[in-house]
Amino acid sequence: MPAALTEIVPGVRALTLQNAQIEVTVLPDKGADIYSMVHRASGVDVLFKSPWGVRAPSPWPRAASSMERWIEAYPGGWQLLLPNGGDECTERGVTWGFHGEAALLPWTVLDSTGSTVTLEATLFSAPLHVRREMALDGPALRVREVITNDSNEGVEVMWSHHPAFGAPLLEAGSVLSAGCETVEADDEGPGTLLKAGARYSWPIVTTSSGELVDLGRIPGPDEPRAVLAYLLDFNSGYFAITNPRLNLGVGLRWPLEVFDKAWLWQEVCSTCDWPWFGRAYVVAVEPAVAIPGHGLAGVRARGSSGLRIEGRASRQATVEAVVFEGRGPVSGIAEGGVVTFGDR
Image 1 (tube, one colour):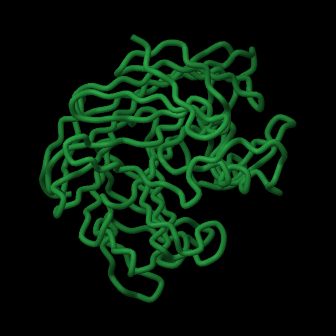
Image 2: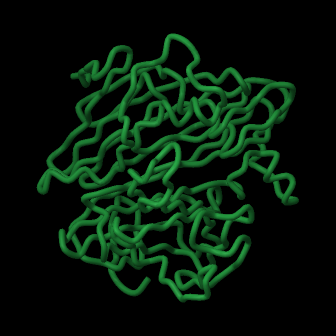
């Protein structure tokens, strides 16, 4: 039986997938976002929610920039970023907005059951068609994406996932594990903690004031922190957040042949101005094809490149998320969401 679509605010419908272990809410009308991921035994939703939540589409442009428009529409949860990530730029004669177009589009539901959904969308700013297949498998959510270039010309893109996690999973003492060796601070001044452009062995870093900090230990909301950095030199494509008090964790695994880097975003009640005004307590680890997070122009300025999709060709990748019981730290996540515990 197809999963039911329920309007949660005017113009935005939700579709719920569930099995005995997890319940996942998808927003087809808003980017095919994964809005919630609930561990059914505890009732804990592991995903972050923005202070303004799900908003009805604006009938007129209220925001002055693509960044403001994207954030106004941002309810929290987990987004697909395509064809751009971070700052807007001009590509092939058109503006590629902040964090790209894919998360702002309405998607078409092609098929659904109680535990699966297939959606598609066609971008306007790039000649790309995207198909997303989501399926629950025990405690895991499997997301398979196929991106097809519908033109004869090759296209270079930034492609990344933007899953953000919040309380009650996050609290002082929660642990962040990752399969990387290196962390590099953003070179334009990543918030309040790290020296711009500095590189460290994961997870111990030296702050701008000279203190040693373990980025794998998540501070409580009374310890303000803002971080934008990049996780590099992965030996295994995964990360996990565990809460020892709740005996609960969440993790992602992804293919390194596509996403060989990840962005690290921590906003711990630190930004006192727009958009957070001190109201965001969130950690995100975002598998990505390119850094830094300043748009495709910023990637090229660094002497790097995005992912090239040749004319009439497709690229695909499968990302798995798992909600699990355990106190961590996590040393690996295998196919099907099988979690191994041990040293980070």
